[in-house]
Amino acid sequence: MNRRAFLSTAIKVFFTTAGIITGTIALLFSYPFKIKKRAVKYFPVMDEAEIPRRGVKTVTFKYKRQNRVLNTRAFVVNHNDIVYVLSPVCTHLGCLVNWHRRKHEFLCPCHGGRYDIEGKVLGGPPPAPLTRLPYRVSEGKLYIGLKV
Image (cartoon, rainbow, N blue to C red; front, side, top):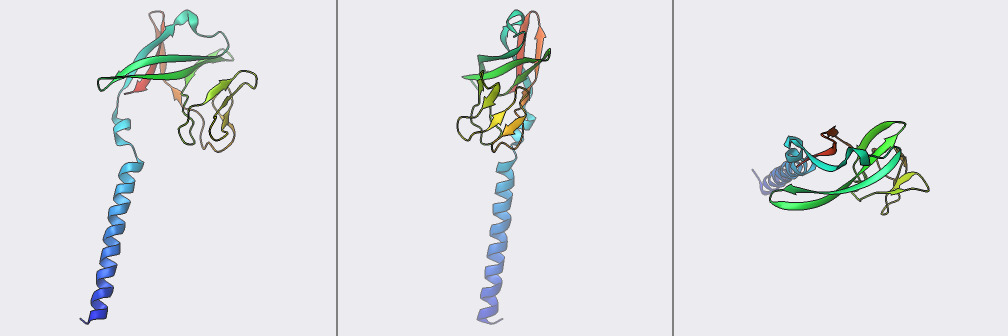
């Protein structure tokens, strides 16, 4: 094997190996396996009587994860006599959206994402609707489920 053939083969092997390693690392970081495996835990957020009769109510609550107490919020919505809970996390880049009462929309302050009262995208860059969180009502309390 001459010098030119050796260098050509060495370069091909190097870049092929680097591509495989880079692709594997990108795949591992792009799919959050640990989040998918977590079980849903329910946290009490409000009394059943405080669930809005119509419209949106923002609830803030604390939960414990790995010996740390974290604060989070969610939106409890009653629209057309259907109650559901929406995550405040924008599906574009993870900013926190806010409910705008006058416009009757959820607005992302960072990139202009807009969602209707059901969490469906109205405009802006978000690729998907707001996430609906699991919830249940028992013993006179509303519990919201999170994967922690």
